Image (cartoon, rainbow, N blue to C red; front, side, top):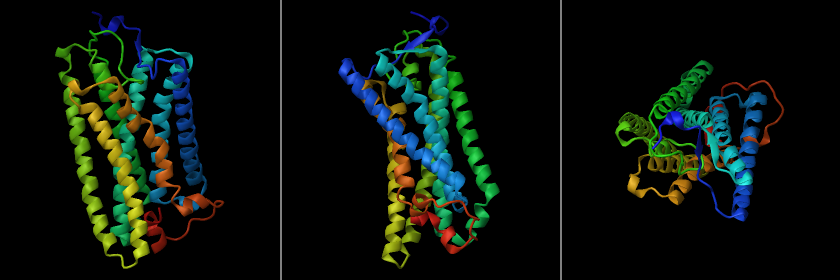
Length: 318
């Protein structure tokens, strides 16, 4: 039996036991990381340098790319290091920092995805009010609120999690520091506060999910009234990938955090964590930008065009 004051480091879950498999996992993680860095980096540079992309849709896409870069750079490099050097150690401070930044970027990403749903709703259902409802000041305030919410969410969970006494060793059943795995090391009588916070977080996530479903119903109703079959196809091709990534993110993340303890297993926990922490940052650039001809072209910077019907309905071209 030990408490948190005597723990100087944690032991992360090894991705494989055999050396060949460890090197294979290192190569896979390296490839995914490079794809995420390249895709999100191109989005950030294109939106920052192209004045024609200074619209609400691309502004939120830039923030989403930043959160994707932050989340994958928080967890994957340490996993790659452990696989390459055949180690499992992470310091107590490093674990706390990893948990904080991961929760920060994941929380901000979810709020940004919710905001992007509202952006599409306004652009499709209320195009004449697009410039009014989502002006530059409104977009800046909304993005700042998303980042601030992610920061407060992360700070609250990290401070509460690492204030719990740890009574069951220092081995984590995950390849990065995660709240459910740390809770398994704490005394059973001291988990009520964090479990309560997780319940509140689940309620907030559910509220955002209801918000997204409501606005997507309005979007689908508006799209079905579009007379052009090609226009409807473009609109649906925009919505379905977004819903697919969001559903994957929500279902795996919620199940990983709220599943019964009896269902936990190293292989299941590892698969779920990869699906909601590693895969989305690499897929988001492909889904949200590579289908967009305006972002793919990314011509040299030029003065921003006037707010026309084409700009107002920009999300339809994704």
